[in-house]
Length: 421
Image (cartoon, rainbow, N blue to C red; front, side, top):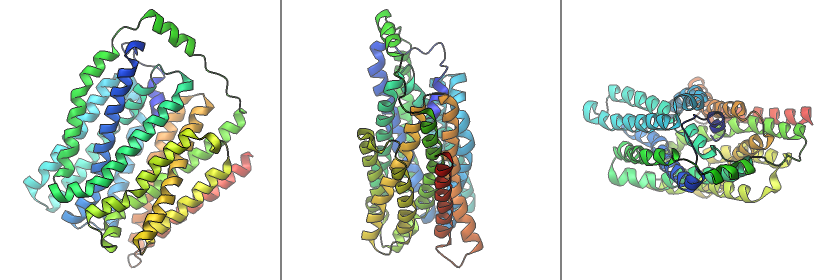
């Protein structure tokens, strides 16, 4: 998600100034907005599958279809979000995104009061989900743009690391607590709680915009200019580009696996005898492992430019994906999640790090990076839905079909490595 920021920040609007005196306050404010966004988005998206299963009798096939719908719109809308923010202004984009997400969720909360849980209500919730998805695309790229605005290249990896840890921890907290909140406070909490967080974001924006427009001192401008010349990348450009292409290839497959798992968690939990509360506890383990992996790979550079690490992560991704969905016991599910969290953590961080380390045409790379994630979000559920449609008698058809796609990705990864050396 991080790379689209650089498309939007490569040519910022003239009215946006990042004064040195207020940079710390601004960065803190942007990270607060990110944390609220991460909590709200993760809670709604992940527990929508439980909500749809309970109230509309959604099985794996319908929930996978719902996710594919999300990925389809995300794939196209997110690609253009950075350019929209650059053209119309970062804070206008954030207002549009936060307000749009909040409004969509408020409408979703009103649907049961108007139509109950009828087929009309189900269709309305689909429309709400699409509205929410499109609105969200105005937020993440813009937050990333604001965080990287006027930041020297040598500090971007640090900003990226903090950014990753915040959204990953928010997703983990949301999944850990979401099941209990849904059970204790009722189904409508799925809509009104994140809508309230988006309202807080809208209220915070004017203060941050005022800080962003404060004039910078001449001394701070001189400091920025002095820092603006980054050291040359000591690695051969051919090597950096090879690993960038490898990471670009691997990352969409990680999202294929993730979004092949999330929609079927309600059914998986039910098979293991877990209530939504306990499903939140048990099935959030891979979220926390990914968070820990982000910290590890941020602090330890030993994995940089080692194909064996990326290859090992991809192999672990395939094995743990299958193990999660076919686990007959909880201890196997927990073990598989730990491996899965480490694998997706390294693959995502590889795409992020190598994209930054090449050090050229970042805006163009950002669009490719973000669109590739959207392709992965769409592909996993779409393949799963197709397999279940053609093989309705085989409950694990979707699992094996997605595993087959992941295996093709592994073969392509090795092929690119052998071809480029």
